[in-house]
Amino acid sequence: MSESPKLSASSGLASASIAEAPAPTSPHPSSRSSIPHSSVSLRVNGTRYALTLDTRTSLLDALREHLHLTGTKKGCDHGHCGACTVLVNGTRINACLSLAAMHDADEILTIEGLGTPDDLHPMQAAFLRHDAFQCGYCTPGQICSAVAILDEIERGVPSHATGDLTARMEASHSELRERMSGNICRCGAYSNIQAAIAEIVGGAA
Amino acid sequence: MRPFTYERAASPAAAIAAVTATPGAKFIAGGTNLLDLMKFEIETPTHLVDVRSLPLATIEDTEEGGLRIGALVTNTDLASHPRVKRDYGVLSRAIVAGATGQLRNKASVGGNLLQRNRCPYFYNTAVPCNKREPGSGCSAIGGVSRSLAVIGTSELCIAQNPGDMAVALRVLDARIEAMNAAGKTRTIPIAEFFRLPDFTPAVEFALRPGELITAVTLPPPIGGSHHYHKVRDRASYAFAIVSVAAVLHEDGTGRVAFGGVAPRPWRVERAEAELPQGSEAVVAAAFDGAKPTQDNAFKIPLAERALALVIAEGRG
Image (cartoon, rainbow over the protein chains, first blue to last red):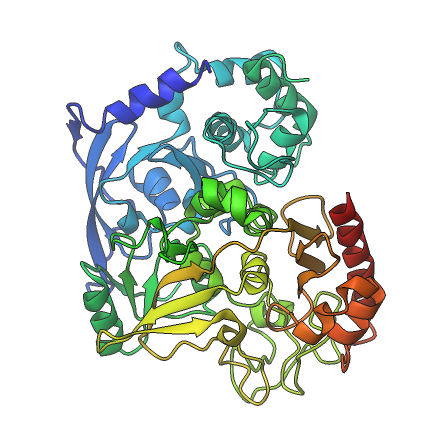
């Protein structure tokens, strides 16, 4: 699959040289020393950040408010909408339902690490070609999910749309639709999102 | 969210000691349910003990030919395991009928068993709820109860268990291993794991304070055709209105449990003995003594139709 080199290249950074970046200053320095904090070393898109955060900080808020990686979006903040989808050690999760403190030593990949305007990930390019968005707010999450589900199908992870559990998984339209159900698009760009992913899959009937 | 302190446990014993020693402490694994409830301040732990680095994330064959599933195995990894897909298909099917890919990647088997109920009044902190505030009253009784339980309820609570995985585990006679502060492990049959509300609806599980789920074990495979049929308000990503987990044999016998209808996965062995007689006989026996509300009485005929469909599927 065309997107897998990107994924493995990125996860390879975990063992290769890791750039040290100074931790950006917290936008809300707490004057109340009674609020518990914890130290965490986050590896995001190949760069390591040492942070001391209020223990309540979600991975999503750490990315957006502390590291200023605002590509990952906050929608519902309750795991319903998928706007905050990121890849952690290669699998997609909702960054809103995870504490930053729980990701010490994890390899986190956000939309910023997937591709850049000058070097788009194939899935990003396909979303552009198929006009797979309107307002764009859910798009980073949609793209991170789309990249991850192709890997899930490859690894034999079943879904509710899977017929024979023991047969080789196929990236059929019904499989793609079901697997993308954790990413809501209020503009209703679903048909073009589907088309973009299907193009990357290639030949999905 | 209320402030809390956080630590990462180095061993099961250390995790249990930390939770036992700290009033208001809780274990956290995937956190997909706990953090959601903490944001609503329905759960207000003072201290979180992160158990994810404990060595409880493997699936192993047991000597008897079954499986021992570590409590930290993710829902995705359990549903994807070759032996689960081959020998315990009802479990794979039930897991992928629940939540989303993102949530299943994070949720753990142990944590999924401890998923709290989804009664809308449990989530609404402005109104009474006997699960949230024991003794405050039940807002669901006489309220909007379409999604709630029809059997196994009490005068204090009519919330249903929302799980999918647990319904399949009930059909498979899974057992839950839990370790206590003395380092002793006991085994709880899944039939006894989920408590009915009776007079103490806030007590939902058979775990004792400080006990940590370490594994779920499955007996050797029982063959048959495996089915999980979930009826819900959307085609995907919604809790069950009714679900049916079944393992059916060619001679017409089998096992069946219902989800979304009771405070626990609802399996009545006397009722499943009626499987050769068909879905009406099974459901009549399984829901004998049901006390549905006006809003959710439809669940009983719906359960019958869902089971009829599953039986037809089983006959191919």
